[in-house]
Image (cartoon, rainbow, N blue to C red):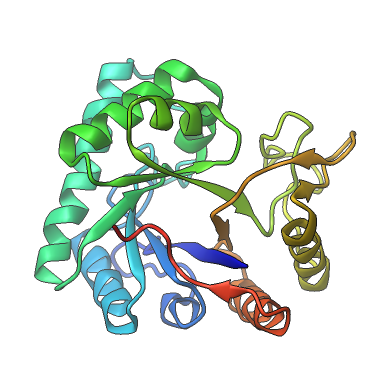
Length: 253
């Protein structure tokens, strides 16, 4: 069995740091790097790209709403064409900086509220995927498993990979429990590891208020912005190794 392990990184700005990217990058095989919307600036982006390149970690772009105060977790009303231009601007910036950092962007994963909206709304999903395709049709899209973004990406002929979350609770429709609700984030590392390994064995994901649902996944996300992110990533990587699950990125062509 093989699985990719990804984390959302580079989510600081200026003198403000978020998480320990270097240590997370020692554990993961793919890094979704903020590109100036919800977080990130040229220096933070470049530094994170270099850290990933030094470790041979696959790089992806992590565009989100331009809402630093809300960390991109609030929906900003925008026309689909505006969303497309926003995604192009952010992903394009990371693609250019990656050249300076001697690496390359291989995939795009929308962040936070943008990612959740694209998961539920076909029009938004189409705007996001069309923007990615306009930049470079060889880029992959990393989408929450079983959502509109995954469906649209496949329909538009993009390389498409499905993602599940190690540290987030699920609803019966396959979407994530909103962060404002109790139990949305799994803080117990052992619980998160046990649930992940059970999922990998069976393909069934426990949900809140319903029976487990079937999900497909190429990649598992461990968030890099929590206080226990490093411990979570290390423990998951160790448990995967103990179960002889190979950890590798699928998103490099």
